[in-house]
Image (cartoon, rainbow, N blue to C red):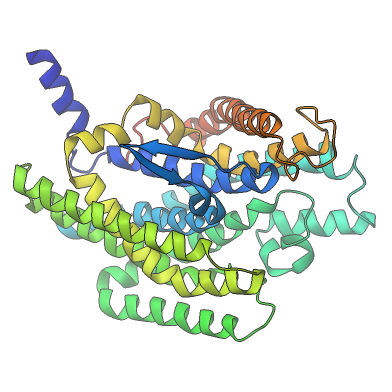
Length: 403
């Protein structure tokens, strides 16, 4: 019994300057929600679960799953700024810029280019998805320069991989992050106000257009999301150094996390209730800031709250899922689309999702997730991690063995 207690304490302990166990599960869940949305678009399978006698309809969570891309960008801002928050708290020199760019490059670019080449050579060209050869060259060039979200043909109509617009936003953010982080370190209130104000003004500008599909997911529209990630990282480090691992502190942070999760569920349900593409986009613009605030509070509450919650979110299974989450994110949608295109699993009618073929729906969802997980694991352990170990260094925030 004593050994089990020691193992529990070791598994749920919060390490100074090391990994944050709960973030493994949080990241895995957010990627899962995004993937579930994309697969739901093809399957139309909307399951219900019974929990403690309550019948819970998962339709709002599936229908609004795209919202969690914002959560992943917030997590990116949180993790990127965390070394700066530690440096500020310990009065140390700020992290140097060159290693940051090197790590980001080798973390993203090799896997990203591999995905692009597979999609170009095995999908887009063989299936004749480009009208002109020059269209393929321009699409590939835009993606290789991470500018594909600037052009309608390479963002909304690309036959390569629709989810990769997120990588364009991330890389554009990485280019300016060291400068934003230094400004936030020296002038936090001013920098936060400028980043947030710019995001609000840009979203207000985007909302003025009837067709704002090209505007809602540009980098300026996410600057406050990243800024809230910076704030959450600073608060985390400050709380971690000052709060004791006692019952009161855990209860307080757990209540904070629970309230934040409830607020997020309220936002999810409201967004899922929007009807029509225009209203859906306006809902995203309206809810982006409160969602990022609540997600940041959830990070803090779940990471510093009850040890049992940290164990559920930070264990070997969630660590594995977190490790392969980047690959799963960039592969899940193309896997789901190709399965539908090739009628796998077999369906006797053209649109089994519309006819409510529950057997086909379940097989399709299971196969989509399973195949995407296998491909993601192979890409992680055969491409991403070997390159990271050789060239990119290691990141000890999410995992001591990755990046």
